[in-house]
Length: 138
Ligand SMILES: [Zn+2]
Ligand SMILES: [Zn+2]
Image (cartoon, rainbow, N blue to C red):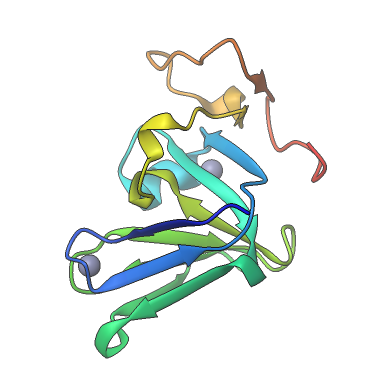
């Protein structure tokens, strides 16, 4: 049984993952860059039913980024917590790596949308990389 916890910078949003990590992903798409401000985003993929959020005073908000993607974040400190995509990745939560306790020990197993990667970012060659989105099973 795997159990992990995490949360936002100010501590008002906290979550628990009671299940296995399905994948650790580094995403180099332009959408991730524009919604995080970072050169790429990294997140762990878990089953939605294993992911539960406790937040005080409704501090967890969601923004519809595209018709497929919703980004969930803390309204007080702005930390992105997770993304959901009920169309392409139904039943999954993409939880931002840096919010997870113990994330120092996690290495992305796959890098996706590498065709839009910034030229100065290098990818760990031990994982798989895909020019765009991999199939769901990957
Ligand atoms: Zn916060
Ligand atoms: Zn992306």
